[in-house]
Length: 150
Image (cartoon, rainbow, N blue to C red; front, side, top):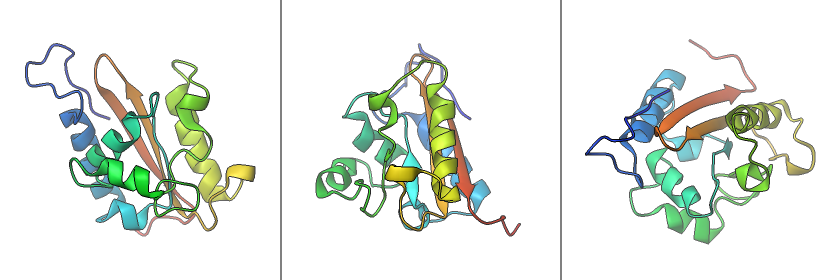
């Protein structure tokens, strides 16, 4: 988890440092060196369509200013390179307070092979991502179908 002050002068609302820091810590802890190659599905807090490419960048799935290319190319579709929000995500339902936990639950369903009609074939590792706007608060999890080796 990471957050930054709402009034921080250096706060970047498009590429938040708190998001980049949380993602870097998560990937290190999970032993992931290339998120786009090692994550099979991602449930990301995307309340508006333009958030998807923005988060793809700060989470390390795309270079800065290139997240839109993944979205536009279809790479984030259910059968794409990095399926994003196959459940419908936050744009489908956004119960404030529960939305982040739903992202975690959906990620867990993916790696358990229990996501039903929105199951990503062969998902073994998934990202759950929660966001709280005003404080730039981020919480993230990696869940997997196999027990970690470390």
